[in-house]
Length: 297
Image 1 (cartoon, rainbow, N blue to C red):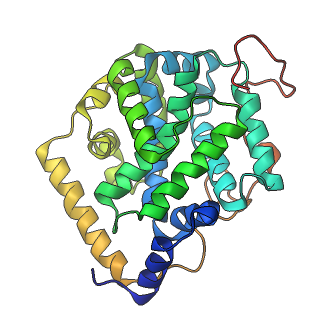
Image 2 (image 1 turned 60 degrees about the vertical axis):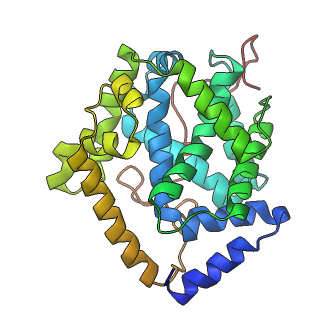
């Protein structure tokens, strides 16, 4: 593969990364080497939750997505990127873990539901990268990404965590095979969230937002559950052609020196001047969690 020398140097580093450096390795993957595709994978993972009726019902009752779809979407991404950029055990990382535990403490659902939501953030971006990115993830990167989310799950007091990426894939596939189904709540959540994706598109493409999401998901069972139009041959070919052109250009450009995400300064229409951590998170949760008999932590 003929690529820019800076990309090649980083790739060699990622191939030789020590398992003990899992956090730095994943940070390099998500913020530099495969940043754009990792971000898109996170967006796609967010949508998949709506295809699970039990999860969709919980999200619908909470009403955050219906009332504040832009905030819910951006805040979810910010939490994950804060953890990646700063580290799970940094001061900012601990604050984000505490937020996750507070948000999920009294959420109904069994442990497999919670584990699935977490593993979408691992499996969906990795599969997108394997299929569509400018290069494949290295063995070290797969191990590092898996370790990152396993460690996050541990800090959220989750049990039954898979030990490897292969085990995570097995759980993910089995869970979806037995749980993905249409629901009125899931389709409503999808409709509410499409506007967030539309806002990121050039104006001429905005009417095609649902078709684009469906094509990127590339899963008829899931898109049927979400009430999205099925991807056709033309849209699949257009996506493949566009990504191939993008990847060819990317391979010839140097590795960016500025990370894809800078804590506190993520540019968006929601936080144009930056944000503080106390602005992040849903509104409809208690600030002082009270343990119950059905909690994540």
